[in-house]
Length: 202
Image (cartoon, rainbow, N blue to C red):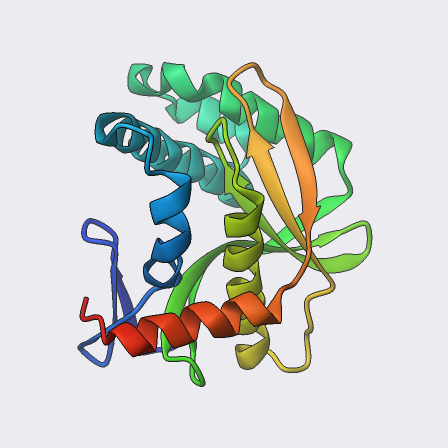
């Protein structure tokens, strides 16, 4: 992680040396406008808040263990217990070892920041795994997002290339789907070009 990189989680804004820097989410907006146009904003807000809590719970489990999470669990997180159980099941059933958890990176070539959920080993391969708790996953968006993440990681770790990209979709019924997506350099370049052409300011 860049030493001078700061992420304001409340506003979802990245700063490098005090200057605002675009995020991967900013560059994905053209895809989101199409994929989310028919979903009421209040539903998106609810899903976003729930997703944040699911991410925080899974991060806690990876760092401190499931038993510790159970001891610290509060009543306000009862509604996400199924998602958490799904993550625990996944960890038990898949050869999966996370070693970078919720870490932010800056691409020096694209001047874009993003936080990668997991850099991990899956079945002996170095992988990126992105956690999702939504019911609908847009494959094109997932492919674009993880392709950006692969670039972010590899520009900062040239000696540790990513071999596979995965979406881990957690459901509230304690089940999960583990889906591999392909790296798409063209969509990364296209979205980066579109953002630069629009001259957007954060």
